Image (cartoon, rainbow, N blue to C red; front, side):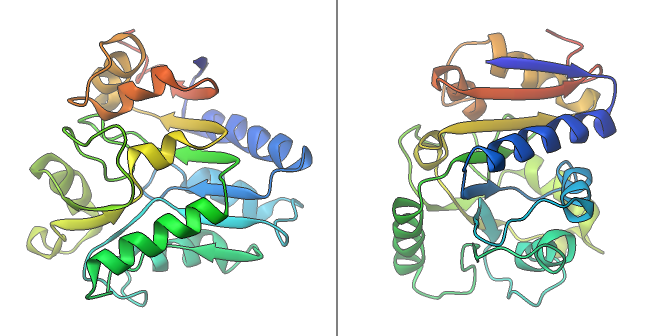
Length: 233
């Protein structure tokens, strides 16, 4: 792993932007994207930049099950608000959380990933070590699948909803095997609440109990962390 330590999340977003710019300049055309609060400053930099993604494809990690793309809490809505409405991509893909045929939804997404090999995959890091919505216990060779969210993940996401009861308890997520197929993985983690997960991801045992630990086995991973997240290394 290439570990980049920064003072704060703003500096982290600047370093991540440089990696996106360099990767795009070198000919990358497929970008795996993430949601949540962590990548928002990066997306703002991309929106304000002259970078041209009009020939690029974006493939998102996950979506809540049961939310339509027009729901303000859906990741379709999030990506439109923070990036896609402001920066044109050739094509964008986000899992279909409203498809009643779950097998069809997951199989279709696996085909999309197979047909568009990811050059750079952006990840956040859950407090319990999840990447995407791949919770502890997810098989390392997993493909797109339906996830039962853990209580800690529901609690962490509750801040985005008016009431905790409104937080979906399931999601459709790109699998760990799919994430690991990316040529380059870029993970960002900021804040003291991520320190335990960061330490276990980087120096702990490789175990499905801590999904992000699998990144130790990838040949090209960049981790950007601030001082608080690096506190237990």
